[in-house]
Image: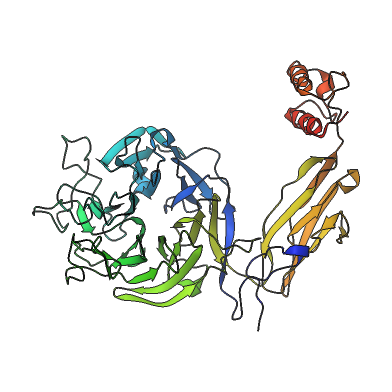
Length: 549
């Protein structure tokens, strides 16, 4: 058997390296932590007009530009509509899409639930020469009422085939019933439980401020008694969908209720009008609902289903069309939000083949816990894949696993008070056997009474003193070579006297007296002698908590 380390594996008790995975060939890819700076990431989008960056939307309503290689987050928000977004239940910012002609018209589209509980699709414009969308440019494309706190859907995306905008809408049920209000099977004056298809570049309804779009004449219900916006229906909570950028096929991850999760697929040549069977069917299984006829030939079954013994909240992903990991070409990636599972398969119009579980090999660097709470996948303009963990506010990129070790990130240099514990971490990857060695000022460290993890991804030194100040580097070694982490400079500062008013007590009055003196520019507040700055305040508070006399 061959033991594999897919990423910088976590530290077990005693600092032992734990290999992630099992027997078999080394996988082609791993997850690389890109950023932790965006709280509750919920949507990822990109545009060929800005190939170096992806755009990550936070649930609360802010959108950030992120460098696809370094993970650097632009300091200025790309757009912030947080004052307009409801955060109850499944609410929030739910969708983000760039206009196919973004490079020339600067148009982006967002989908969210507003403070009144309405579903909203809006257009915003980025001014020429600007790197942010103007809030004042908001233009309503679609606003429609929704039940509060129900299944929202909310994904939006442009088809690469026809450049029309598709919008997913949940059935509005809060859960626990089989769509009691019968939204998903109602296609007259009801836009819930459906996929909508519209053209946002013109307006068929100039007198209606809530409908500023054109209905394509090829939509399946145009000219009939049903709503012309509807493309397909019979869906419960189509939370995450996507188009295959090469074929135009549409993939729908529809979250189930009691027992089954499903993936649906519409070929690019589909004329629309498909009924996916909710609520009389959950995936391929009959329910107690009589809102449609179970197993009727007019219903379209999913291409894949899985039971709640495996997972309970499907998150639709993307067909991989990048070039970094050729082994994944044409594979559809999806996840389960609750069970921390990531799979891929070869999709087809009538089913899937070659289902693979990637949960272990994509386990985040430095941990033994697979990526959980996946809110969405994303792809950049080159077709490379990204995954967002909404609970831990982490965004990952799938990258090739190389034999030579690489270092993704490490603890930043820091200044600590005496008697602190120094905790340093290096995140990296490489083929097994991957080993680690920490050095201080060029001298290799070994575990002893104070030092733990000298040969692991995490180094801990208890009771730090001035002798522990210095430059720390961790060397990663694999059969293909060695790689040093960035230098981490650690400074151990004295425990400064916290009895600032010299009354032989360290109490709250010392803090007030110190701050008053600091704002007055008193030289006595320059604790470390390098000129008064805000670091002195933190030094003083550290010393105050330690009770330094």
